[in-house]
Image 1 (tube, rainbow, N blue to C red):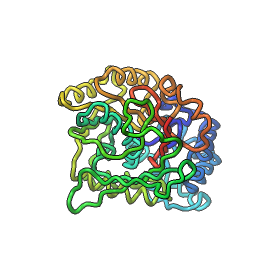
Image 2 (image 1 turned 180 degrees about the horizontal axis):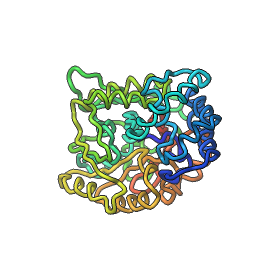
Image 3 (image 1 turned 90 degrees about the vertical axis):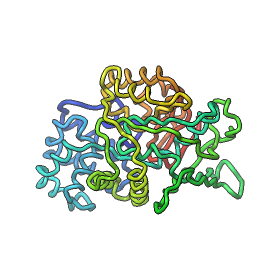
Length: 375
């Protein structure tokens, strides 16, 4: 899923926004999104978001869309029907003239962007869990979309240490993919290690994350999603490509590579509603995990899409499952869990997620996996 900043679809981390909103409220949310989420990351989307905020007719169109009014989805739908990547001054009339074509895309599709690079920020937590248990991992992702984050052992990694915290000449650690498939390119996920990484992977009993040095064995994997995606389906891959922000060419190339891998591996993604009381679909999958594997249930940028009560109930369910729970969400999405990260989060001036393991904050991470800073 894809709320890209520190909160979620409604820009304030309260979960999925529903019902009709005033034009003033929608305009304020789009301006906030432009200035906090898109600025410095996608100049085009920042420009478009400010443009929407200043266009009363479009604000009126968005008023009844509830959570579907989020900029990621609206702009992806516009590009899907052929509106070009151009300044707002050149495309404003197209948004107005073609709204009847944009609206059905918004209503029938979702922001299920699958960012494989998030595996680079998940890997230190997965490695620490494996070191503590000594058994192969069983990965179960909720909100799995096409399952690209279920393939951490199929990717190579390059970790760069922040130059401000080390004087070593060699500040790069390369980790090759543990599993390779002939004839396919395996993406190299580039991630910056920020802050203090003095805890090493040889000290798994300590509370802080250690720098990654290898890929733990994955012996079982499955996912759950309200709308599972098939990476082998051309329409699906085209939509996922459209959801990548205009200037993010490297992400688009990585998505093609990871999608080709997922089309071959075919990770099992089953339909399931995370807001259903008790989440029976999740329990059915958990029951299938072999007893000699370590279950790791994980999610990234998913819970913000749930109503508040469903999100809190799901968090309670995840706490009670056997195995381990790894979360990467906006700081306001799980306030009880993320309370321990509040001081570090308050210092942030760029979008970020909070990573937690078993309900304890472990790191701040870049939303698309570009960096990780242990807590």
